[in-house]
Amino acid sequence: MTTRAISVPRPEAGLGDGPRGGFGAVLRAEWTKFRSVRGWVIGMILAALLMIFLGVFAAANGFISCGIPGGPQKSGRACLPYVPHGPGGEVVTDSFSFARQPLTGNGSITARVTALTGKAQAGPGPGSVVPGRLVPWAKAGIIIKQSTRQGSAYAAMMVTGGHGVRLQYDYTGDIAGLPGRVSPAHPRWLRLTRSGDTITGYDSADGTHWTQVGTVQLAGLPSTVQIGLLATSPDYTATQASFGGGTSDNSPTLAGGVFDHVSLTGASPGTWTGTTIGGEGPAGLPPPNGPGSAPFTRNGGTFTVTGSGDIAPVTPGPGQGLPTVTIGQSLVGAFVGLIAIVTVAAMFFSTEYRRGLIRTTLAATPQRGAVLAAKAVVVGTVAFAAGLVAAVVSIGLGVPKEKNQGQVLLPVPVLTELRVIAGTAAILALAAVFAVALGAILRRSAAAITIAVLVVVMPFLLSALHVLPAGVGDWLLRLTPAAGLAAEQSIPRYPQVTTITSPAAGGYYPLSPYAGLAVLCLWTAAALALALVMLRRRDA
Image 1 (cartoon, rainbow, N blue to C red):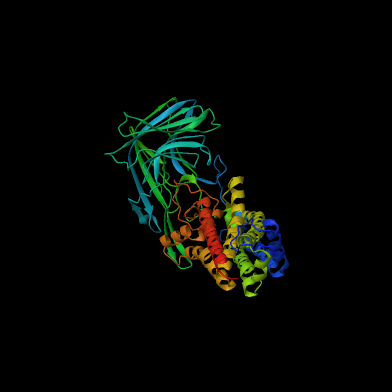
Image 2 (tube, rainbow, N blue to C red):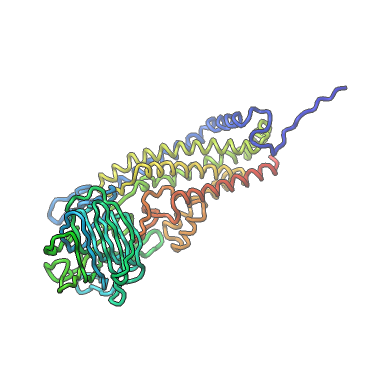
């Protein structure tokens, strides 16, 4: 008698094992299951529609109106002041006191800074000016600027209130020089030289031994530029967090820099002209040297320049003076869409256990790893496609509405915009795969959905609503899957700007976009690995 051997596939077989047509056949089978259940398809479509609706609705509600009593009322863009843009197209603040002379051709300026002092407006009225409050990014130094127009190119060597000497240029560039605070006992010598479009900055502690801090290119500088001394000081901002939000106290400040040993080469000896770039000084503070005074005084060879404002990129958050928005704020509906997507994804696996269909699935495809991978690929792909379409439409419809309502959009490069759109879709796809893995681990839809929402959405909400202390909230956004939401951040973190802001306001996350997305990938991979182990070891 002849006995025929029957091969029984191993439950732990890999993705490519078995005689059933390979992984492609398993993938087609899982896709057929997904599209055959109307509720799952509707759920994905609903997630995309919710993202679009909430994003456009939030954009349409950013209404701005203005006017004076008895005068005509204005709204939208008509309420905005002049918004300067830097050489790179970024929105900037360009407000400082400038003691200047023209420089035609090549040349240099050298000065010694012996003091940097500050004062702030602590309350209403001229009598509430508080001396001694020097904010960390108060600045005084020397500058070569394309013109007195706001937003024009510049390079400056400056001392600061708390960050030592800096070479800053074109609003976004920042290079560190000598550390420490300036004082009569510890002065700082500064020098800028121009050679065509090349500006080089130097600093020195004694005026004899000089160190090159950096060299920058200011493309397209005209033959005649403005050269001289500057002083400026951004608002003092204090934020008090409270449940559901927070309050910000912004106080205008003044900085005063004292200069001597000022020398220029290449410039014809001329009269120093005082100019207040960007306005007439901070609201609420009296003029630094009396009514109608110039922004600087000169006593022999000593100059005192006093100014307020900032010369830096505009970032989200309080104290900027502009109603700013980012492209990420048009994606506010992503949270609701994410909840809908993880609900569908968790049910895609757990429903088979609830209805007993998992036995049929594993009988048809004994390769359990292939089943898990196919479900993850199907749900992840559908979630990515839904998120991609929703993100494109949300930004395409929401951003023009925000502009029409008088919001100032902080522009970003095209590649950054594409990264935000693709990053949003990737967040939804990874969260969907994470929920599939939880469905396989827990075998119950409600438990899988609850845990997915708790670990992906709740850390963000707890941080944004200030339920937890700021430090704890930051660590949650570093260590939990919610870290992946950093992929929606569009504005770079500039080291030379003090910003107190929340991710909920389109601001910064504790991790960079790619680092945050990597954390979410690690959580998803770990959940898939655990799901595979449990799927192989447990009975269907």
